[in-house]
Length: 221
Image (cartoon, rainbow, N blue to C red; front, side, top):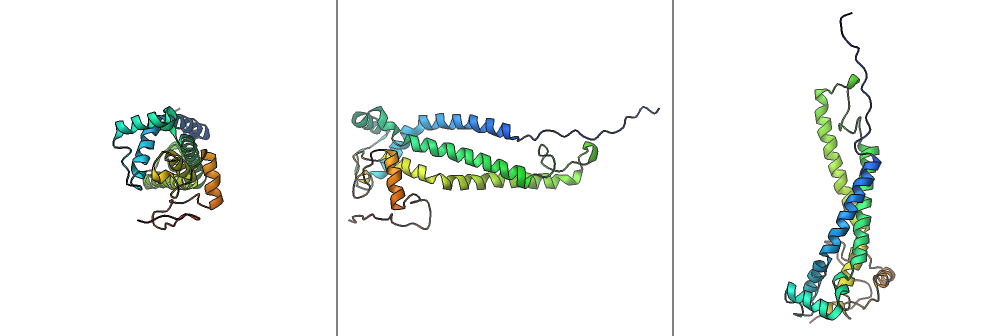
């Protein structure tokens, strides 16, 4: 005997981006994003109201501290979380749609060989040098798929963003949150149903092709 050992075929490994791993990572990211949204939402409300007050040339919110004091005095603690529920729902749905679509595309459309290595494997587990360009291309394609799925998910969940922004300024004492610029909504579900009836669920979604919402008339000075 010459002391040599026969080469054994490489044992297939479990994909690094398995469904179970994607579910765990997405769940952790969902909790982190929800906590961040909960903490930062009062600042989001103040930002929107400071922008909306330009519609009526108002100066109700003259600064961050003044805005905190005004909202607390007029609406209490709940005023800082106006529009929070649709924003949370939209963030969670967008996250799950983005990650699951990216997983499906990467697994069933882009994978070629062992996904743990990002490319094909030669017999007996030996990596060939000429497979490196393929690895780089596969990694780029996966990053592109993540961006595309994120854009697609944001388009589908845009109505939640719209409803959240409208509820943040709804009936807050600013001209932009009252008629004729905006009706008064009793809840975010009422806002959703009214926008749906008017066909305005995607208003403001396009950067270039904008249109006046159906059934709205504005006063120009």
